[in-house]
Length: 260
Image (tube, rainbow, N blue to C red; front, top):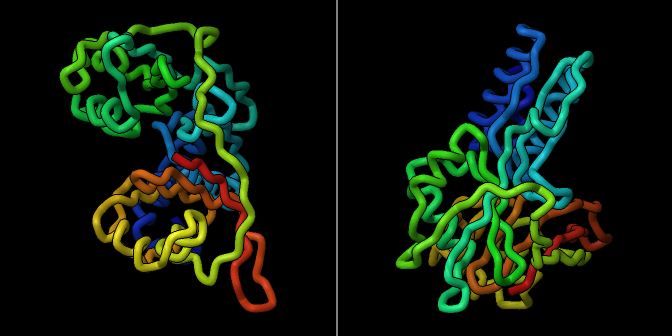
């Protein structure tokens, strides 16, 4: 990748930028499509930016349903016409004794990753409050289904199902416009959840906050477009649009918010 590209992104995103560069070269060199693993919204944004800047290749995202957060991307030359099967994504229902117990997103994800398979092979985990389903990359789905027989102490069974049987996820994001004095992590959390900067700092330093699914303990971490912040006990926030600054130099932001 051209060194100038790096300056538009964070230092810790360089490895991902280099990967995107390799994928683009591969598609150009072999003149055949390339399918990524599941990407988070920030990675998808970086990938889209780089493809548009540095190539005339086309790309398409797919995560199983319209509002999916995590999606696979197919990068392809302009002659190619993608179909749904190209995205190699399977949908599984998690059967468990729902009368006697409940599951949570965190427990399910912990168990899936506990099989030794990377997070990037799993798409969204969705629930309607009772049933749970998960999108899994075809490369590993049979292995994962055979391995996962318990989540915590609960006996479970993963069964492949058709997309027509997908539940409607009950998580609903609301959009909220707000102004923040800075794009620091502690500042954004305190603005959205109406808590003091001190409280927000404590949550971050105590390891209760993740940015793009990775624990982040730095209150001064600067957020960027399409980052997703999860705050244990509070919910999640996504930076959906940066809309410039106010006269007082505050940032105008369109947030997606999911309150617990």
